[in-house]
Length: 536
Image (cartoon, rainbow, N blue to C red; front, side):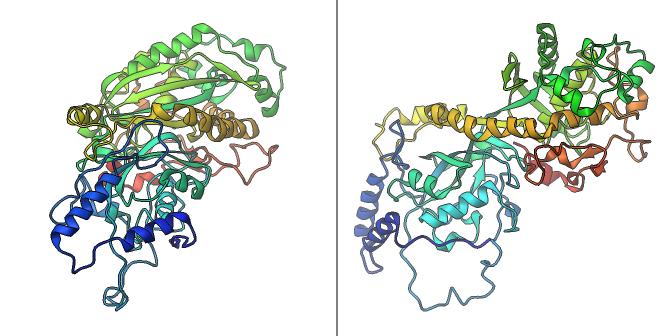
């Protein structure tokens, strides 16, 4: 991806030019340079973005000594942008004078985005892959907040993120930490003018030098949304319905199916599903089962390529809250809020799958506890369409800076504001309505994504889902044994990892029979270090 240069006609560039002209030349005395640097620090006492509703802002002295290394910064996490890596020394030995270096500050960028059409959050070495960080970084270069000297490598400005989201996943709030040139008038407003409307910058805050978005983050909140019709038991005659009956799970025919005609099409069924309303007792069943996720457990069955003995599978979930169903248009939706310290790759989508499948089949909640044991089973992923990162939380950092701020005023250069998304709640909620909820519901209305997913589950006739039973136990036939090939394994479909279906018409619903299935996803080739990097 070509990195765009700053627009020399913009007001921000004029401001930069004026600042550059005021920089001391090489012959200036150290004392004069120190005085001018202190004057520059005073200008940083105001909020960096220039448009915050609180007195965010402040500055700190430029770190002494050589180049500082960010916490947990791995070499393989930074990428040279294609076409900009210095192959030789021509540019370094050029006789053209370099622009004066402007001071960079440790900053936290509070952002939100609609992930549809993006290849995930994290910047990638391939410029053809459009990512949230890639677009954000290029825009920072364009407005002058990242210098041209650093435009070829995000590692030079120590870029990191609090939570890494997969392709297509949305975020109402996330935090990116990096070194920025902050002396740009109305930087937040300037950035939002240049960014696509699907990415919003809520604020830029000065942070302590030790701040790292990922390691400083205490916990994250995610919400998963799904249509309540997923809770309708499997259709009589379907493979899953027959499997449940053969294994002693007797389910009386559900009124939804007994009230229908003998022969119905998929389109007929979906039309009726949309007007289904979940009864209160079923909502309560979901809530009871969801409580089984709370506290510390071994979630090796809720991710990929993780062994029971891998200590990193131990995760702490602070709370799981199932909200009352809400009707939008014709469809009733249910939201589940997850608050955990951190989550592994696909963990929430697999937790949601266990929650929904166990509840709709009448399996007792204790089956979730069984899944924390050493036996490995296969757990399908719910569609990516319903997942939303709400925001990361920095409670420990907030307490730390509260102590440090006690001796300062908000206008002092040393003052550090807390990372608080609630200050921007009105704008965030409006963004969610306009760019996240509306698209999520619109895609479901047009495509029937969740219906296609649950039909793919009901059509499965193998042993992988035998843990869905009335006894709440994992039978040996459902256990995956290393080195042994499973007979008729459940095959996931890539279509359910997508959150945009621009290549289809509104009447062209997903046909699960036409989709190319795959037993294991591309993530099966990832090593442990790469999987660790995907935590968020």
